[in-house]
Length: 216
Ligand code: AP5
Image (cartoon, rainbow, N blue to C red; front, side, top):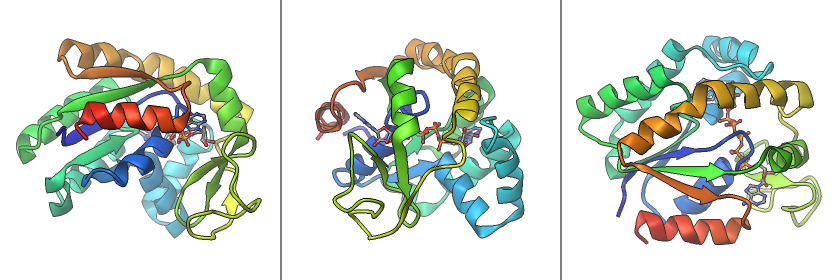
C-alpha cells in the first residue's frame, strides 16, 4: 500500500472531494494547506491575517510561510501511518523543501496523484461550489447537491461560497497553477512518482481508480 501521497491538480479539479473519500479507506492523515490557512483565518491568528491577504486575491501565500507550516505538521506523530498532502507543494522551492523534510523525518513520498481537468469544467465546478462551514465538505449546486439545500449532509452545518471562488480570483489562481505548479508534474515524472487520473469522470469512478492504484 502506498503510504505517503501528494495530491495535485488545478483549482477545482476535485482534490478536496477525493481526499475526503480516500480518508474512509486509508489510515493516512489529510494535510490540506488551503484548509490550514482557512482555519487560521477563521481563528483570526496572525498567520490567518497574512494568508487572507493573499488567498482572497487568488495569490499564493509566500513559500517560507507555507513550508514552515507543513514542516511542523509533517513532524507530528500521527503522520507515521501515512499522509496525504493536498495543495502542497505548489512551487519548485516548496517541492525541494519537501524533499529535505521527508529525508529528515524519514517518511519518503510514495506516489503523486495528479487530477487532470479542462479549464471550462474547472470554472463550472468552482462557480457552483458550496462548502460546509463546519467540516469543509464540498458540494456543487447542480452536480453534487446536498439532500437539503444549504445544509451539509454529513454534519448539518451551513454551506457557503468561498471568498476566492469568484471569477477574478479564479483567473489569478489558474495563472499561478500554469506558471508555478504545473512544472512540478515534470519534476515528479522524472522521479517516477507521477500518476495521472482523468477527473472528468464521476467522483465515484475516480475514487475507485485512485483507491486501487494506492493499493486497496
Ligand atoms: P486550496 O484550498 O488548496 O484551493 P485549490 O488548490 O484552488 O483547490 P480547490 O480547493 O479550489 O479545489 P479542489 O481541487 O479541492 O476541488 P473540490 O474537491 O473542492 O488553496 C486555496 C488558496 O490557499 C490558494 O489559492 C493559495 O492562496 C493558498 N494556498 C494553499 N496551498 C498553498 C501552497 N502550497 N502555497 C501557497 N499558497 C497556498 O471540488 C470542486 C468542485 O467540483 C466541488 O463543487 C465538487 O463538488 C465538484 N467535484 C469534485 N470532484 C468532482 C468530480 N469528479 N466530478 C464532478 N464534480 C466534482
